[in-house]
Amino acid sequence: MSLRKAGKPSPTRLQPPRERPLIERRVVPAPGAHRPRPPAIVALEVSKTYELGAIRVRALRDVSLQIERGDFVAIMGSSGSGKSTLMNILGCLDVPTSGRYLIDGVDVRELDEDDLSDLRNRKIGFVFQSFNLVARMTALANVELPLAYAGVERHTRRERARQALASVGMARRLQHQPNELSGGQQQRVAIARALVTNPTLILADEPTGNLDSRSTGEVLRIFAGLNEEGRTVVLITHEPDVAEQAKRVVQLSDGQVVDDHRTTALASSPPQLRAQKSARHAYGEASA
Ligand SMILES: Nc1ncnc2c1ncn2[C@@H]1O[C@H](COP(=O)(O)OP(=O)(O)OP(=O)(O)O)[C@@H](O)[C@H]1O
Ligand SMILES: [Mg+2]
Image 1 (cartoon, rainbow, N blue to C red):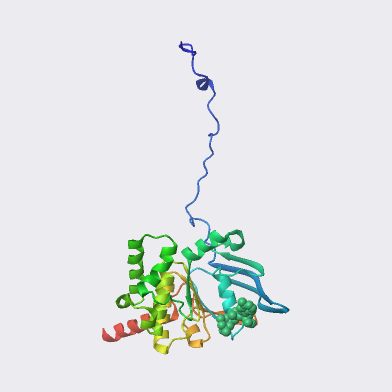
Image 2: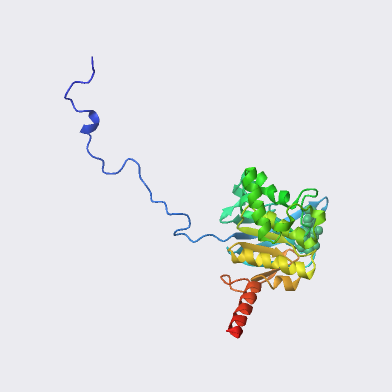
């Protein structure tokens, strides 16, 4: 026998209509729709002190630096001025002794080791002076490595590595090992490896330090192209003519920022591409 009497309305129907919905629905704007996007990099009074027994080395002293998305910044300074120390902190490879560091608006202190390595894998591409390629592995296998770490399936990572190598003009050297490549070619493989995860931020520590002037030009053209695509590029260099290819130059001395000036507007093409474009333009006018 049914417990509910026929004809008796169910208790829910007797309740008065709600004035407010049971679940409040907030309209969530699409990411970046209203709020301005945070800068790519914000360092606030960042200091780094190395302790070696009784010796303390103050490698960075209260460095505050903001880098907008899409900027191309050269960091200059004499040997020992703290450039690599700063780069390691910007790339989340090291942590400041004091001060705060935010990447895309996220304070890295709030991230655990897993989040940090995920962030390094997805957002940041590193390029070093000494290339840091794995010997006895082909160019293709070297470029596949970051994707393998990220768990990308074999066929896909091979294809993406091929594309990255082609984008730096190395499509015909896929099976070469590092010792079968010139310095400039090795650096282009290293750039392909940095690019293959499609990072928004490229950090390069003296990427042309071991290269002749022709290879330096090739590598700088690649960086200019990456910046033109909207990526943020931070490049350490000793060479003034390399720094001239950036849009902004930051000078470090003794662990402090002593000069910071913009040479090219943030929204403009980097100097090298501008020069190329205007040369093409001039040629077009002359030949018309
Ligand atoms: N792991 C470390 N332990 C102790 N001291 C360090 C360490 N790394 C760097 N230093 C010291 O910190 C200071 C800054 O070093 P850093 O490598 O940042 O200089 P740099 O500007 O990159 O120099 P270079 O142009 O020669 O590469 C130097 O005095 C260096 O000796
Ligand atoms: Mg250095």
